[in-house]
Amino acid sequence: MPSYRLNRINEEMLREMSQIIRSIKDPRVNSGFVTITHCDVSGDLKFAKIYFSVLNGDAAEVKKGLISAKGYIRHEIAERLNMRSTPEITFVSDDSMEKGAKISKILNDIEIKE
Image (cartoon, rainbow, N blue to C red; front, side, top):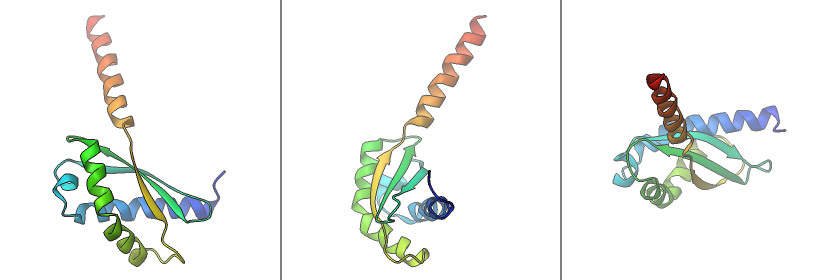
């Protein structure tokens, strides 16, 4: 179970990443609507998984753009969060919003048929 401190760090990373992602100038990232859905920082604070979803666009291309901007993102995280060391970031595509929308559509179709 994550500690209170780790939960706070995850929330801060999520908040800062949501702001940082808007300042990335790479067209692969800012062409689609990209949302940071979750951050998972390891217990030793050396690694962070950043989960993102894309509303319209290709998640693979967005991931390439995020990986290409990783240096900038780590620099911004280091400046904004006063941590001893900045975690190594990996990006993971989160398709839970797409799955939720698909389930919602199925449920709506069922209601219409009845």
